[in-house]
Image 1 (tube, rainbow, N blue to C red):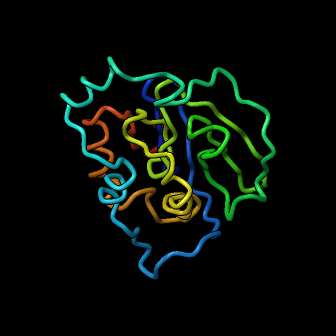
Image 2: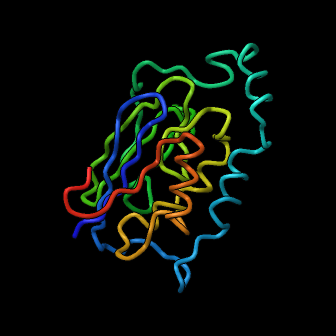
Length: 184
């Protein structure tokens, strides 16, 4: 039985499928717990808690290119998988200002992706998220938060994954857990 996690980007219909590979590459606590817990980590990454009203008030004043990057293509960069501790997904916090992210596979191959405009790569959920949910300056410190679990047999991407997936769906991020034969 194959278990997969499918992540849908909020504005685009791109998806990523991650499959357990059983390869141990990262250090973690003996019990595998994530510290801080996922909701505390997401709150810290987000910064100020915004209500729907606050978010609605932001939009008329937001300046594309200043408040969030507006890349239309991935610029040339000098980066390779040797720059990272382990295989996984990594926000480009410098050139890409978190709109660009890179994937290093277990063979050391690098693939680069561009989040849709108004979204940034979230280093905790490993998907593109709305710009007001991600403080790019905090992303580098979170490189190991979820990546350390990607190729770990028996571990979910995030603690309490079933509850997290249900809440993310309710929050509209589009994260969906799919498992079992014939799952899409």
